[in-house]
Image (tube, rainbow, N blue to C red; front, side, top):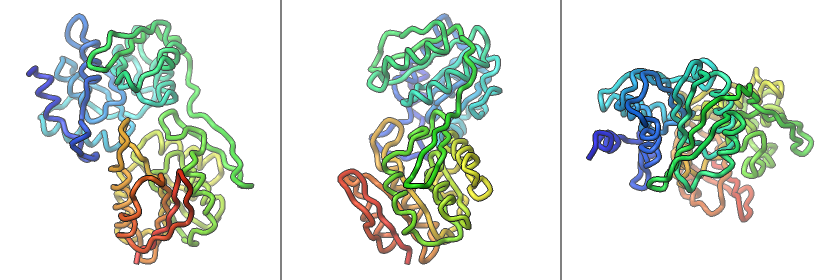
Length: 371
């Protein structure tokens, strides 16, 4: 077993969902590091983007990097990295937001390829605009999640893009010679929700982008049936569509939008501002409902994720539903939309009486009242 194998074997996912089917690293982490190390040790300064639970950051430090600037969209990923570093007694990295100062002067960027082309586009533009002229991007992922569109997209921000040989079902894209494209994110789109105008502003990594996914639309169709609460929570808010629409429909309501994703929170704030409700829609990056007192929320809206990273898995949604049950005030209601084939009803019934508001072959909308 190599030193890296030993390092990776000790990584855990907590506080993210832990399950025998889910790992804290995969073969693409090792391939990214190996491709970056061609010719010897890593340079002293390295930028890491998209690390999931610490494999790239801690692997870079083990491979010779002395200072690692790291951006992880998920606050849960940040905390997993911190926990793994503490367990291994490793230091030398700092967390950053996805902005110009993060990549300024960077010569080497290690990137776990996001599945979203929009997320990759925003990252590529940022690096190609603000990093050093000699920057080298080593971007890897699992072959089954990679597309030729990624090559073409990187080619808009870098003049040289080429792929490595595959290894253990993983591959790396190398990008160099930045074109200095400038920044086109976030982006904006106007919608009409049955007479309710809504502007959606989205950063690249925000779920559904500037669109409104069909699950959210299913829940939005029942806004008027929701209880008339003075304040509400948009849990796993994405671009803030649910919370902002509620604030537009009800001029007296105060909304707290929560999401683990930095891109989601930035998008929600921009969406609230674009719709003139920023004074009544606050957004905070959080793991579930952390910071929300027990039995305090009269109304929670939830359109939960049905995947963890690239894996279809109900663990994240189950955590959010359980947390909503904790935070609901007596008599408060959780309005949730979920894929009809998933078995959330039993868990919702444990919170309190649950009624089915709407069901079709794709989505079910439920209202759960805490007794």
